[in-house]
Image 1 (tube, helix red, strand yellow):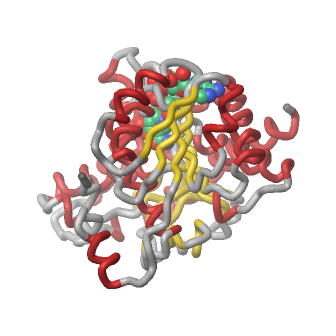
Image 2 (cartoon, rainbow, N blue to C red):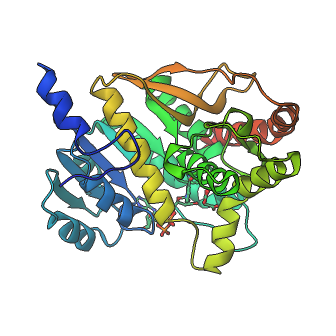
Length: 341
Ligand SMILES: NC(=O)C1=CN([C@@H]2O[C@H](COP(=O)(O)OP(=O)(O)OC[C@H]3O[C@@H](n4cnc5c(N)ncnc54)[C@H](O)[C@@H]3O)[C@@H](O)[C@H]2O)C=CC1
Ligand SMILES: O=C([O-])CC(=O)C(=O)O
C-alpha cells in the first residue's frame, strides 16, 4: 500500500526509480515522540503508509501501546514498535534516521504559541537530550510549539552535548505552506494541486510571511487587498483552527498531513533523490537572524542548501522588516532557556 502525499510524490515514483537505479532502497527507522497525541496518532498513520519507512517507532508518556497495536495492523511495509516509559526512550530512538517531535501541549482560545513555552520548552529539551545520546546522527523535525523557540532550544541542547549539526535540525513550517497554497488556490481559482507558495520567517503570527508574489502559477486576478487578506489568513490559520475547536486543541489533522509531507521529503533527501525542496525553519544566513524559515534543498545529510528569499514585493519587504523583532526575541528566549536549565 502506498500513499500519494502530494503531486510529484506519487506511489509509483519510488518503484520506478528503483527499477532504473542500481542502488537498493535503504531501511529507514522513523521515531515519533508524542505519538499518542492529537497530531501523533494521525501522523503515525500517515508515516506508516510511506513506503520508504521500514521501522516506525512510537513513543509517548501515555497511550502508546494502543496506538502502536492499532497502526501495526495496517499491511504496509514498516514494522511498528511502541514505547511508553522514559526508561524505554533510548530503545525507541536507537538507530533512528529521522525523529519527529509533536510532544507537548497545544493552545486553547486566547493563548499565543509563546504561552506554551513554559511547558513545551522543558519537554523538547529532555527529548533532545535523549536524541543526542541515542541517535545523534538522526534528522530531527520539531513540531512542538513555539517552534520559533523550540528549535533554538534543540540546537543549544545538541551543542552542549557536542552533537550539533545544523544540517540535521528542522522546525516544521510545512503547515503554513499548505495553508498558503489552499487559500491562494481558492482565491485565484487555480487547481490547488498545481499551486506552490513559499512561506518564510517563523511559525507564529506575523513571523509567518507567505510570499504570494512568488506563487506559481502566477495570477493577475488578485488585488493588493486580496494579497493582504490572504497573508493575514495564513498568519492566523492556526488561530482559526484553535477557535473552531473551541478549547479542544489546535490543528492536528492538517498538521499530521504537513508533518508527513515534510518527513517524506526528508527521507527522499536522505535516500539521494535530487531536487527535493521544502520550506523549513533552520539555522540560516538568509537574514541577520540565526534561525529563519525559507526554502531548503534536502539531501543525504539533511540540509544541502538554504535558499535565499528571491525578489520580494514592497508589501513582503515590509512584512520581513516587521517580523524580525518578534522572531529574534523568540529565538533568544529559547537559547537563554537552554543555557539556564
Ligand atoms: N509546527 C506546527 O505547525 C504545529 C505545531 N503544533 C504543536 O504540536 C504540539 C502537539 O499538539 P497536539 O498533538 O495537538 O497535542 P496533544 O496534547 O494532543 O498531544 C501531545 C502528546 O505529547 C505527549 N507528551 C507530553 N510530554 C511528553 C514527553 N515528555 N515525551 C513524549 N510525549 C509527551 C502527550 O502525552 C500527548 O500524547 C503542540 O505544542 C502544538 O502547539 C500544532 C499544530 C501545528
Ligand atoms: O496554532 C497553533 O497553536 C498550532 C499551530 O502551530 C498551527 O496550527 O499552525
